[in-house]
Length: 400
Ligand code: AMP
Ligand code: MG
Image 1: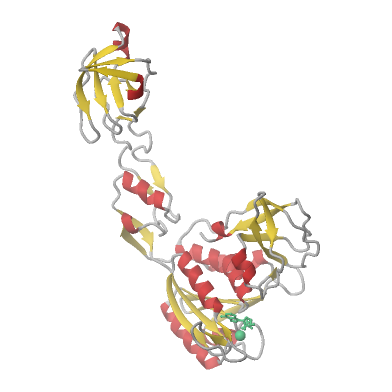
Image 2: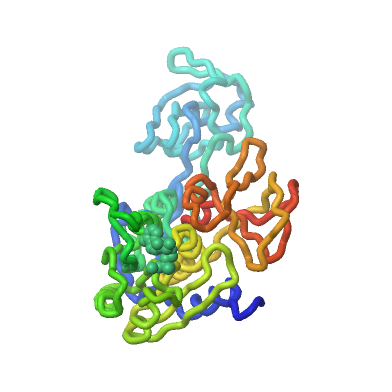
């Protein structure tokens, strides 16, 4: 540990120890459940498929009939959605994909391996027993778990739920996330930019992140650098939200009112974190609401959101897994002078299956985050040489 700085892991552990899944569960139509977090495991009350059925367009036959010759009489046609009659000895049933296998049949011959003449069919190749039959329960067994609790439902998950006939699913209610942005210098795009002012880019980045994580967003806008204004917004946001995230004002400069405001309204932990970018981080609570104050610097607020707010939010949303999946990837760059703090370097896949480094890793360069495909999680004081394997956190993993 270096001079009074807290490690990323210690800070994260403290945050996560406080996070709890929201207490409310709601039953929503499965048709609208994609992206929500499943609150209870789901079991199937049926077998899928519910009956043996054909995997091909062709003929359902009884193998033992072929010992008497390869020509069979066709006396029924079974389409998907209908049920045929039991197969009589010496006959074949014309059958289509998804149609139930008639009683007595033990294989399907695909139509490409047959020749039809009138009401007869010649089988050109003897199939194996069970060929092209999808057996009852071969996808899902009755009573088996199909979806675990604590999972964000993907499109294929709600499809799976529907395949066993589930019409609604129990999900955690959406987390109400409040955002506000401190700084007298901030101006919204569309307004003129007076001297000394800058555009409020964090509003766009953090709002986008809140939406990417399926939060119910409350945006309280720009808050001037004053203790009263900060306390007032904080009080309102805390009364309406589960989690309040802010940008700026968490340093200890003259215009940094977030710390005293949270201390006045609730309780606060202030940390200097041993990471680059993104040093100051504030964590506290106001009533039932949690508070996370991110640095104002746009690269820092983006990275600290992904490293701290993301797992905190996921746990509050009820997700059982909060760490992002990392990938071991090849660095196609040198990083000879590492920092004494853990670094999150902006990198991008190249066409050779390795990672390139954005040339400036300065934390004021927001372009680096837009250019990148993700972050290399580089341990403190760890030099990287071209060809080394590094820990890569792709945005695709950080954004879920
Ligand atoms: P602060 O943490 O308030 O000291 O801000 C650190 C740096 O980030 C300063 O250069 C601010 O001007 C800048 N900054 C603060 N908030 C924002 C924002 N919402 N959008 C863009 N830059 C910001
Ligand atoms: Mg400020």
